Image (cartoon, rainbow, N blue to C red):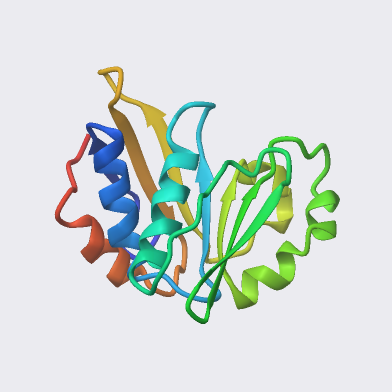
Amino acid sequence: MTGGFPLTVMLGSEADTAALAARLGAVLGAGDVVLLQGPIGAGKTAFARALIQSRQAALGPVEDVPSPTFTLVQSYRAGELEILHADLYRLSHPDEALELGLEDGFETALCLVEWPERLGSLAPEGALWLRFAPGDGPDERRLTVESDGFSRAAAVRGALETVRHDA
C-alpha cells in the first residue's frame, strides 16, 4: 500500500465510530469510493449512517439512514453532493452490481459500499478500504484503513490522526 497506508485505529464504542465517520465524511466528496469490509455486526452500517447524517446535518435536515440490505442501494443528498450507500451482501455475482448503477456513482457521487468483495474485479482502483473487525471488548472495533492511490489520502490521514492507535 502507498500513501501512508495501512493505518489501524481502535474504536471503543459506536460513538467513537460515529465521530470518526464525521471526521472522514468532512474530507470526502464526489468521486470518492469507500469500501466497508467486515463481518456482520462489525460496524459498517453504523459508520455509513453516521457519515451520511453528519454530512446532511452540516447543511440542513437529517434523514433516517436504514441499512440498504433489501433495497441494495440508497441515495441521499447532502447539499449538492449525492451519497450512495450500497449493501452488496445479497449479490451472487459481480455483474449484478452493474445493474445497480454503481459504476456511474463511482465517478459522480460519494459511494459507501458494504460487502465490497462482491464487486470482484469491478472494485474501483484508488478506493479507500475500511476493514472493520471486532476488538477485545463487546463494543470495541479495530479499523484498518488501506488504499493504493486514494486521491485524498493526506486528508484521510489527517482525519485519523486524532484517533490513531497502532493496534
